[in-house]
Amino acid sequence: MVDSIHLIKTENDLSLENIRKVRSFSARYISGDVLTSYLIHLKRVRLLSLVSCNLKELPQEIGELIHLRYLELRNIPVPELPETLCNLYNLQTLDLEGCEKLSALPQGIHKLINLRHLLMYTHHRTRRASPRILRVNRSLDIGRIQSWKRSK
Image (cartoon, rainbow, N blue to C red; front, side, top):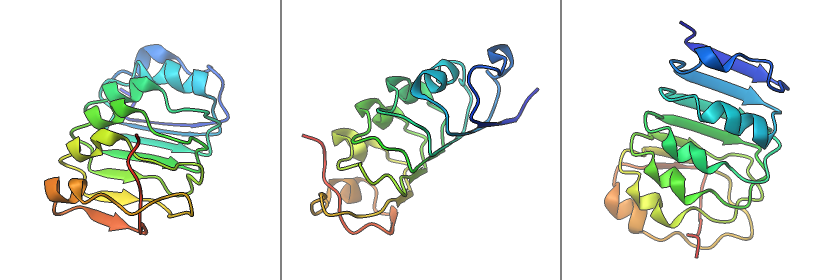
């Protein structure tokens, strides 16, 4: 059984049949189509790390990774996160550092009741944070974030 997979600039050369039991998946510089083809097979993944991937949007299928505990989306040029991200009720860490185009978090972000660490940079387009997520989750550690706004 493969426990961990790391991809760098890979375009569909990994066998998809053996990745259902993978617990850790890390990818750099892959496209959205390749990512989507992997996400639908990663049923037990607990750690997903996507760094500098060329994505215009994060696939909706990310919300099906219900065992996910750590999600790293570093240097991803997406303007928003899909609402399906809020289905990840086991998520403990959401790392959005370097996502400079990200201007909003999903409306249902408060549903992530196990979220303990939210890491992201502040930039000029964000507004003051709604305290809604903090009321739901008082132990949330907001690292390197001064403000954010919810999607409309």
